Image 1 (cartoon, one colour):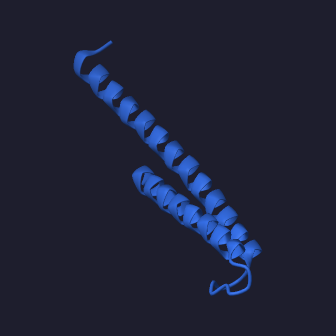
Image 2 (image 1 turned 90 degrees about the vertical axis):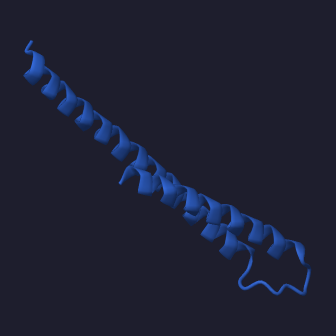
Length: 85
């Protein structure tokens, strides 16, 4: 689960960078803009995607850390069961 969240985080970050690039290209053309929306729309989309990427990244790291804790706890219990204390 943690790996999937980290992949989602990277994907959202990529889309955020693309949206940021779209805002620069939408703002650079003076009157003949063929891009949908305006600059504020692209900034908002980029910001929302960035916040989503950060949230997914934090959740992915937490899931990975908790998975590691449970795995080490299980290994410790098996080791104590085999060899005793």
